[in-house]
Amino acid sequence: MQPLGSQKDSAAWIIQTWAAFIISISMTTFGIVNLPVDSWIKGFMGMGLAFSVGSTFTLAKTTRDLHEAKRLTARIDDAKVEKLLSQHDALNLK
Image (tube, rainbow, N blue to C red; front, top):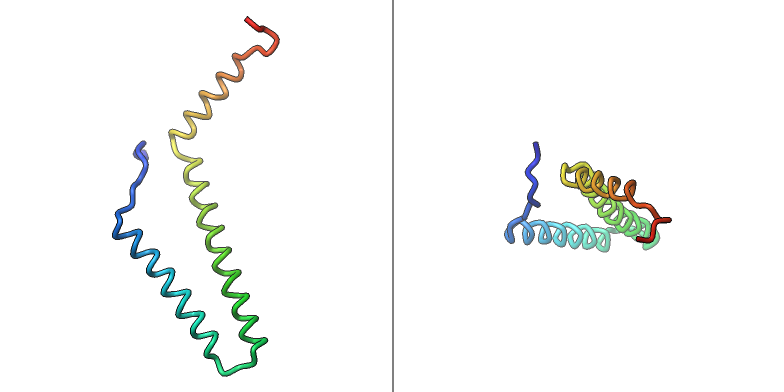
């Protein structure tokens, strides 16, 4: 069973993940800029890098959203909302 509280990451973990991201993007960009090839090839590789980063963020967000949707508290909240909606009578204004 999963814990009901939300997971909190430490400040050190957050700094490490941002540092790793910034260093990896910077070094890859540096490598692309210094390649001994034509500029159209560098542009193509830069576009590939940009799309890879964007799709990585999208995948991470989707994975997180799926995980949160499966949590027990989310399922309980959904059941409560469904029960309230089924008991609501829109025609009864009392």
